[in-house]
Amino acid sequence: MSSFAPAAKRPKRGKASADSEAFPDIKRIEYKPDAKPDDLLCFKHYNAKEEIYGKTMEEWLRFSVCYWHTFRGTGADPFGYPTLIRPWEDGDDSMEIAKARIRAAFEFFSKLGIKYWTFHDRDIAPEGETLEETNRNLDEISDLALELQKKHDVKLLWGTANLFANPRYMNGAGTNPDPHVLAYAGAQVKKMLEITKKLGGVNFVFWGGREGYQTILNTDVKRELDHMAALFKMAVDYKKKIGFTGQLLIEPKPKEPTKHQYDYDAQTVIGFLKTYNLDGDFKLNIEPNHTTLAGHGYEHDVIVASKLGFLGSVDSNTGSPDLGWDTDQFPMDVKGATLVMKAILEQDGLTPGGLNFDCKVRRESTDLEDMFVSHIGAMDTFARGLRNAVRILTEGLLPTAVKERYSGFDTGIGKKVEDGKATLEELEQYVIEHGEPAVLSGRQERYETLLNRYV
Ligand code: XUL
Ligand code: CO
Image (cartoon, rainbow, N blue to C red; front, side, top):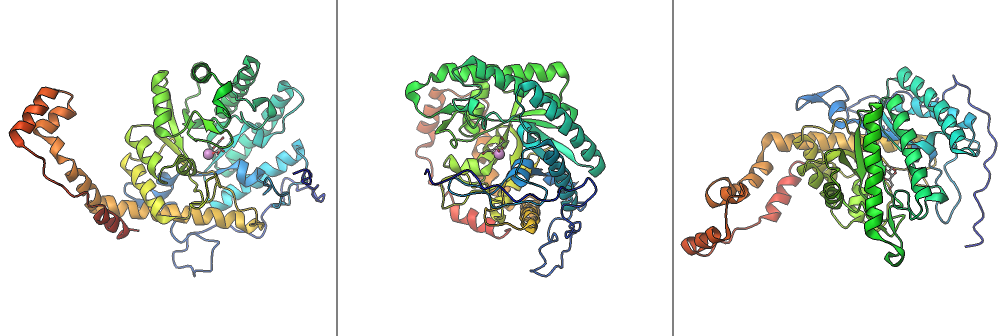
């Protein structure tokens, strides 16, 4: 691997002024239902203000652009240099470029008509020599972000602290064996709760990329989980102290970068929250690419989290079904989007959460236009998912079939079981009286065929 030198310096470019456009060739993206197939700079299905099932499409979908992929992604991978050379970047991590970049980002959000964005502390402002200098950088850039939010009518869906990239976090943040590192993580969370509040953020996310272990041989699992819970508890206390009213969210992921991550999947996180009495203060931010990494189907964690009352937001992306890692691709599968939107409609929306595009264009998708087309394609996919899910729920065939399947629990012995009033003796007596249960078909193919009628 020694032949892989650090990324090549980019050519120096002219600095963008505060007024010049970053995307001069692209106009505001409009809804054109009759657009020809090759007219890709428009929405064919997403019509923000259209009322459907009691809300506008914009209210159901609450799309959000993520800053780290779309404005900090370079296309670099473990084997290759950056490929995504943006005109407002010059290869330096300076405050000047941070300002040009965030201006470009807000132009991008408003040309797409996307009303929310998300970022980590370290995405928007460079780290300084000390925590104090870093925080000053963050204050300055977040002041500009506040100005741009007002100018473009864009809101912050969530903020988060990057507790994984800096080498100090290589053995964990909240789960680090060194309390000095945990203290640094706490300081970062404190500052980002303040910045998120300042920007009117409606959620705050914790994603534990380094909260786990590479080998269980050097790891005290119980102490690490206790420490992580203690850090979350401090965040809850500080949130209340400063009057931040956003929803706290945990984003499950089973692995990558760490071999085993404690926030493995939705059910694991819900168990963790209940174990540490944090279930009243947190919900989940589900990312389907993480769900598939955990060995589940695309929609599994969205549905499980929703049905157990914990679905707060969705990092709306997908993996590549033939790969076993986090490719963070734009969601383009209409069937998956239909099932996710069905779950969201069934819980009457995601508010204050949203559909955050935690996605990156491919390393090979190097045009500025690819940034737009990727988001448009994903927004149209979810708009179709929404329209399909509305038809499924309005016509009612699928939900009725599921309800019917469990109807034995609506009365008699089934109802007693559901109410927690049945005993094993009663169950035995029931079988003695009724004999062998009938064989009932699960009718999987019927359900699959029915779903296909709507997709
Ligand atoms: C990593 C991931 C993160 C979180 C925020 O897989 O999804 O970008 O969404 O830290
Ligand atoms: Co994510």
